[in-house]
Each structure stands twice: as C-alpha cells, then as structure tokens.
Length: 245
Image (cartoon, rainbow, N blue to C red):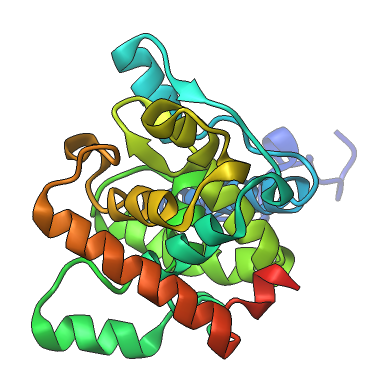
C-alpha cells in the first residue's frame, strides 16, 4: 500500500448514521390506517355506484339466505310502490325524513331522555346500516354508521334513500322489501297496496320476525291505524314532498 493512502471502510458503511426502524406500534398503526383508508375509498365507491345500480343483496340478506336456504325478495322502483306505502313507512319510522340531513337530533335527545334504545334511528341510518354494514349494537358499527350516513345523504337523493330502504327492509321471516311483503301477506303487488295494508306493513318493521301484517293483534292494529293517520298527515303538511315531487 502506498504511503499516505487509506483503505476504504469495510462494506462501505463506516461513518454512516444508521436510521432506526420505526417502533412496531407505529408500523402497525400506519398499516391499519392504510387499510382503513382503502376500505373507506371502497365504500365511497359503492355509495356512488349504488346511485344507479340497485343493491339487490345486503350483508344481512346474505346471512339470512344462508340460515334459511331461500328468501322472498323482488326489487321494484319507487314508481311501482303505492305512494301510501312510502308515506306509511316514513310516518312509522322517521316522520321528519324530509327535514333532516341523516340524523334527527330532536328524536335522539328524546330517546336519550326517556332511556330508549330504539326510536331515534332514521331511515337514512337504517338504510346505510343495512346496505353497507353489519347488524348489532357494537360501538364500531355505530361509529361506522355515524360516519357513513352523512355521505349517503350527500350522494343519494331522498327518493333514492327511501327507494332502497323499501326494497331491502325486512318485513317477515325471510321476506325482504315491500313487493315481496305485499305479495306474501295480501296477494297484491306493492303498487296496489291500500292505505290500511301499507300501514300494517309499516307496523311490522320494528320486529318483523315476530309480526304478521295480515294478522296483527289488537294493539298492533291500533298502531297501524295511527300510522295511517300519520301518513295522511305528512302527505298533507308537506313532509312527504322530498320523495314525492
């Protein structure tokens, strides 16, 4: 070796600062956020897609299909559903459907004050849950519903939300949507439902597996009569305008 010459550092690494790998927790969190972002984009794409394509199957319908072996369901456009049915469903489940942006804050406050678990969920929330999420009362599901419902309200029209809701709502054991329910309980298509029949179908919505729209007990017949009155009221006072105009 010539005098004054220096040998190169072995491996060429001497003098370099070694960059420490990020902690395991940070890597896991970053990966989780990446997957959540991808899942969010996929769901957003589905929300947009379902403005023009009908969501014929939902996660809950698939699970019921596996459990029961078959389902009764038949998609129909809102124009093929009697207006009294649309009004009855809104009167029964979400009378202020046309007035809110996805959440009925007054109903939520009232439910909290009265200690009720049911009664504050809007048609928009129910539709979002049924189309995109899973059943149950877990906090992750509730959080996902709270985040996704405003997106559905922003992308879909009120008519579209109600149309989807009326076609995927469970209305009996293995019966989904008003067309299948109208045929199963009354032997008529959804477009020919009377105000009384529509109100009876709406009365089964809170507990469809345990209620038969064609043979309601006295208490539920009174509930159906109240729903029919409510449907007439929202038709007269303009609260049905967002899905009937």
